[in-house]
Length: 429
Image (cartoon, rainbow, N blue to C red; front, top):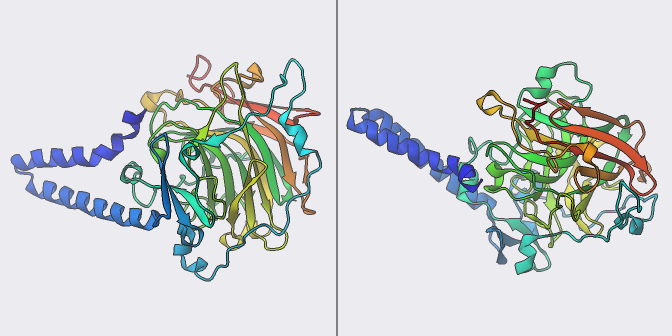
């Protein structure tokens, strides 16, 4: 996987070598132009690295090879943008959503054939084994040269492609699949939503091609599914192109124009303002669930502060990470019109076949607890700032023979669903 993920890093050097060979047979102009392009991109990459990698108060080497820089909270990338120059950091939310259940009960499961009782499993990030960031700093994963060079262009680094949102009611399949993105989701629509919460177990799906990914997340959506879509997203992902490895990592994303010019993953552009010094966006999550064994899950809550209007994110029950200022958005400046939970993969159709990139655990929902991936206790935040169970939950998948989703409900897990699949199989050629 590491070799596959680094292919693009060396492509520039390979191209340059081929051009020098061309020089020997008279292709001097081509070689000179290509060498200039290589030098220009390396210079642009260096400038972008200097912009992203802020001076650190302290740096921590993670066991997985990442460097985590502890950066002064007021020096984070968002404040490079003119819109943020006079922004006063909101130190904490004005209000938290009111829960309609006892949080302490969520760690245990009913003793039944479908949900085996087990103790709460603590999830952390690998870098935390080697240190902590001081107060008034935030942990930022250091961007490496190879991270940027793997992208198809500097402009595309850290960004999703246009139109990657699952649109369950679309009658235009070309709109859904034009970038090869496939989904298995549950969703609600038809109301005004002010946030969402879910607990999802964490896996390490296998990725066939380095330019594919697999993720599990929640979407907070506003606007139409055209060029004006607003989206806030958070969950876990495996993305060799973005990170250079096959690790499972915490991530966020936002856009206010359907992934065209605005937004990015994590802290790779101005947007999200982090206040937490314990959790790093884009850092590896550990441990992960085992097929037929221990299950490890994470809880994510995103909600709109009724007073300030900013969209806050909480990881687990104790880590309020930060917020997306309301002025980033048009529709989400008011409320969301759709909430989605579930999985997404990229299918590049290599060699004309469907990808074998896994979604979730890589197993179908029918296998159940301990084997299939799940979202449990899915909830929405209503206009009164209350967390409650969603009504009228729908499901959607483009190819159920490749990746599927099954909803259910019980007293302990509330509204939940299993989802995922192996991709290519005899029924998904």
